[in-house]
Image 1 (tube, rainbow, N blue to C red):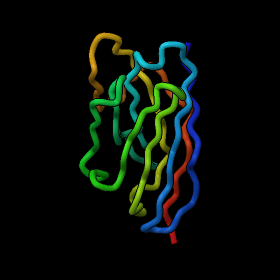
Image 2 (tube, rainbow, N blue to C red):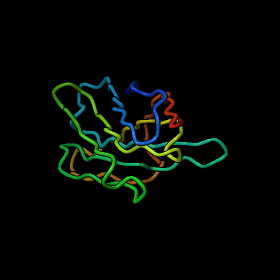
Image 3 (tube, rainbow, N blue to C red):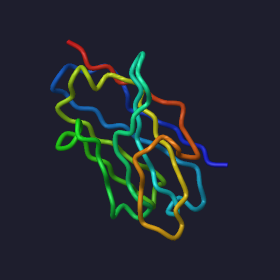
Amino acid sequence: QLQLVESGGGLVQPGGSLRLSCAVSATTFDYYAIGWFRQAPGKEREAVSCISRNGGTTTYVDSVKGRFTISKDNAKNTVSLQMNSLKPEDTAVYYCAADPYPFRNICVMNVKYTYWGQGTQVTVSS
């Protein structure tokens, strides 16, 4: 059973930055694609970014392209999401999730991942 723990959320002013981390307990972490998702009050959960098992493939939703960067450290079992130029509309609970792809270096931008963390709140407000 995989466990994922997010950290790094908080309150930041518009234009500021935050770095979210996702720590994953897994002996075969390099088998997993990781996704970051967010859910704002009253809205459906949406995919923000994902990264393939070896980090070679990354994908972003259009609204965060050029502002967010996802990275994966297989030696430390962590995935980070660097968020710059934050906007009030980025306010949401952010979740990381994992899905196994032991034979393919891909990731997908949907909410059908197998393992999920508990989430961390990001609030962008002046």
